[in-house]
Image 1: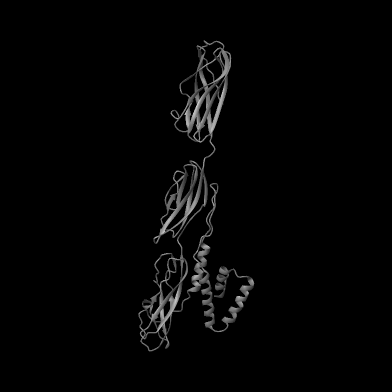
Image 2: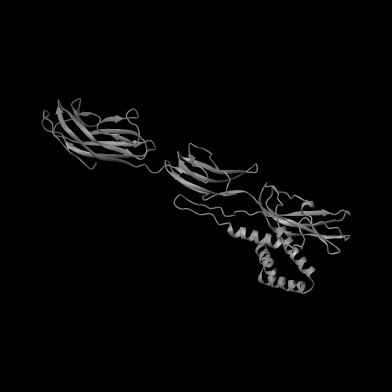
Amino acid sequence: MFFIICGLVNEYFDLTVAEEEDAKEKYNNLCYGDSARCCCLLCLGVFVMKKNSKGLRRTHKPTAQTSESVENTDDSTEMLAVEASLDSMNTTQPAPDISQDYIYTGNGTLELIYITQNADKLFYYCGDQLSTAGMQVVAKYSDGGCQYVTNSVDVSHPDMYTPGYKTVTLKYTDGKGTMKSTSYSIYIEEPSVQLNYSEITLDVGKSWTVRASVSPENCYVTWASSANKVASVSGSGTVCNITGNGYGSVTITASIIYNGRTYSDSCVVSVSYADSTIDIYDAYWYDYSYYNNTMYFYLSGTVQSNYDLDWVSVQLSGPQNVNGIIQDIDLYFSFDDSYLNGNTFDLDQGEYYFKVLPGYQYTLYVFATDIYGGSTSASTTLVAAPDPNTTTTYYYYQGY
């Protein structure tokens, strides 16, 4: 018994080796006296533990990024310590050889009451109702007589809304007005929710899964976001999917309600925009022709971004005759949001045309931007045909 108590006391007080040896010596001096001293030591050990124990707390608060998962610590070690503590606190006495309904009729004086069988339930959550079901209590008299008084004891109810070890006191008063008491210990755990992430970083449009560890396990979990426009939640139970919707930071909260009280845990989600990626695929011009110093052609190809497109432009750069002066001019065909819908745009929008000078070199550009400022461009060169009346010619340019 000593080693159980000493080990538990050492766990709660972090005794040094010297202090533990000193405790052992004192224990031996007491135990080799009388049994009352041993009981006193046991009670002292229980009192020390009860005085310094608190409700179990999950002190580990995991921190994680989206690239890896950090699992919660396992509470099984703490629970085993609680069970061991309750076992050491709630020692029982042997049951007398009498029936449960035996009634004592002697003239002895009531000496004490004691527990022969502990209550079925010693572990509770905050707000639970105390239950003495399964407990057996015996009254002992001065002449050695006994009787079960389980149903006649007054039970004191400790504060069931604060966590930690609590004492339940049992009092019995016999027909002569003599009162005796005994007690046993219970443990109250605070309901809890713990997420497996405390911080998450997401890109807009991306999702991440978060899990909640809940105690008691049968509690219903409610998920909420402090700003759905930044990040929203979906899913049920202990699993939640978080989706980044816009730039910013939000708090995602998982909550349970137990015995009328709310318990929750949360994580901070930071949402940012991924770098824009815009590509122009398989772009080329074809059915290239002239008429009246105007070049006509068609474009094929696709502009694609990881975000919605905001602007696409087809530009031809090169010399033009402006009032008798040849100078470089940029000519555009632009497409705004009235043409653009989504993150993909087909360059084949009918016939393009530009004024050109025969024999001069021109550069064809395709520009594109998305709604978050990403941009790209592609280009190729072409020398205008020397004869402005040249018929249709096929040109293929790939790899813009």
